[in-house]
Image (cartoon, rainbow, N blue to C red; front, side, top):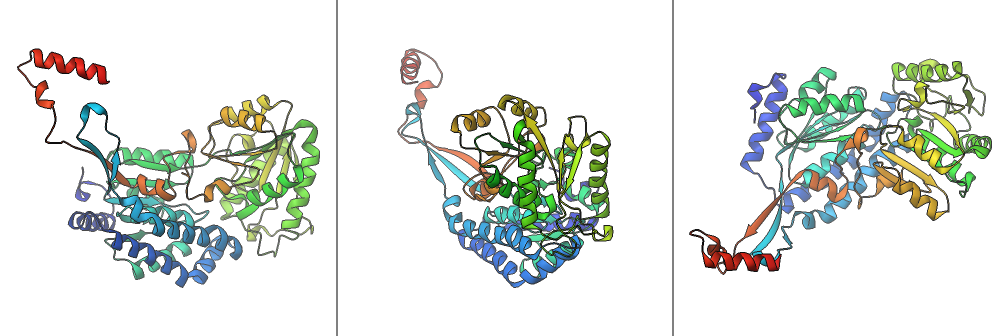
Length: 477
């Protein structure tokens, strides 16, 4: 493996990495008490700084609902940390593995060991949660961790760097801030594992950089996640669920529904149900602290461009602005918008939207809906609404996605007892709960030979004893 001195990165990054590598080599396997202490420190760090976290994220977005930050950032991390604290002792244990008859009385063991130094690159859309949930998994697994925080959330990133410096030694957990050039240099460090959350395009670049060092990667990306409404579903209930899951954080969520597939005869009725559901959630927009701004002018302009192109090609936009307010572009708020009549040729249906715009597409038969889903790259999430279990199972069998929630939206992400991760262009690898622990561990197989074994009968010189043993092994196998 390359040493930091061999890698063209800023000197500070190299020295931080070298310090963590040296610390790992000096104490390669922290015991349960040390790992538990780190997880408790992480939870205490959050509790002591909750108000500052909320304020920093609000300032980075221009307006971000403090309730959304508490719900989708702080609470998620605290729950994940508590789950890890309760289970880390069990996760650490060396396990007995099955041993085939021909190898007994020897036995198989499976050891879980820290990998060493782990890198995490976090995004801007949930800049606290998507930074610390993988970090706490890496710490639970006994690793040293370096985190590259997003430059698009500079206030939160600076706060996070200060909080971590106040609570952790830099050779244990350190935060790196800086622009995209720092991110590129960070991804070229010879980590023992690198987890990246962000866009598919950047994820490809991160994977290429990591490949130079044969660094294994976990990529949490995105894509066009569909919501499929079956004719058997309760459309009002589905509308309330989708309105919450889609317009949380103004749609800037990697697992938000990107488009809805609805029985053709019900498109207009569902659009109206969804319009009413959105209006109940957000009766006003301009000065409503519950409705989040778009993170930057560039992102807002991109979303406006997608809408303009779709309308120019014949799509109909339904802007949900119950109070009829003028939205100041400087505040970067974009009204929830439903789009009817979108076609596959529109950029709106080719790119991940990542904003408060939801195309509603009609279908005549369920296999037509599945063909539309499967025409895209495999999505990070899929949502199915309905009561017909036969059609539900047909959808689950004939689509591949990172995860699924049935009759609700985004909830599969919160399950600590299930893996979370993408597939294909929406990502590779998984984390959350024990899957995060295992991602950042080396599961080392160990075979312990017994003094009483017949292996010597297979040694040369070969003769009748060897032939008898081979007949016996064939019979046992």
